[in-house]
Image (cartoon, rainbow, N blue to C red; front, top):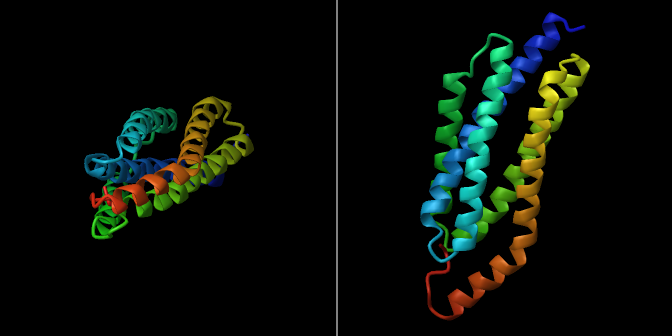
Length: 170
């Protein structure tokens, strides 16, 4: 049995998650276009970008079951924030490393968002949301693991390129 408070909190969380996924798209788009010397990063980001598009569709489907739609204002604001964050790293000599650190934090933040949404769905007995939210949680956790596990090789490549006089930033 759900009540109005649960519904409001859950729907707000879904709309917030939708905005966060738009922020993720903006971050990834900027990083993909700049990762010229790090194709392994660009390839992984491109694959996760496709997952993110699916995550957005899942959120929209769940919102639709509540006769709700995403918040265009939240989506736009968070998307712009993601673009600004990605641009701020572009001035750094170690842009690729800063992006990796930020991606690790962001993917874990997204995982926490979905853990919270799953808890809310359980509390509200909204079982139709479990599978799509769990699928997204697993994708975010998988991406966070990839960023974590790839950091040593990424750092080594950055240092090698710097020693060779290449632009190691991207």
